[in-house]
Length: 286
Image (cartoon, rainbow, N blue to C red; front, side):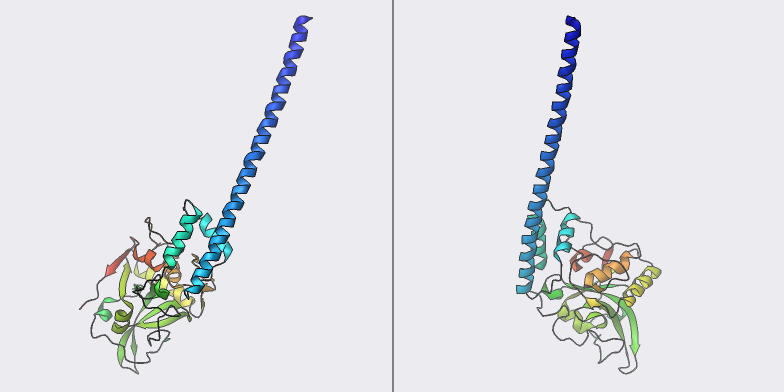
């Protein structure tokens, strides 16, 4: 009888222990989930405040940043920043005006005739100072340090060397995304000097890769400009910013010209491309 009672008591104790332990684990799990949800709400609130501050900062500096709150949050979720502060600081560093750059209300810089010229050459292009006509090749990347609203620089892609019968000369035609949209423009010595141009070439791109990259850019002609620091690659994208267009053109050829180094800015910036190990600097001095 005593043994039976002892076994019954032991069974009750084991049952009680299991019930209590399960309840404790459930309570602990609920507590952890609650803490996690609270932390997420806290981060969201912090991101929302940072987003508002960045938009206000951009507006006050005449930078047409067109980024939604959702895009800003998605950028944080898909990057490796350790804190919202680090992520926000990266944007402030990116949007910091450079006093050495030409400031303007657009990404094209003042009223240079070389922008948005279409397939014509409205006036004589100057090639007396540099060896551009012999150096530039289709698919080359043009980087202007004095462009992009004075913050990030500006990029374009060389379409090729063309002849204009009206001006009776050869000239370099490029494709670029500026505030007028995706357009054709001209590169010459004067633009090189005013905009502090550097030329980069994609190291391992074949002639076919370059042709296809240019075909991608031609398909985007006429589309609008949008500085949102997204990284879109679809041919059906409705709008582009300068470096996003050039990057996407090569990305669609399975060539990623974004830097893989530690100094990588939000979105895909002109400076990200110049820092890439996939491109090389091409001299054009005579």
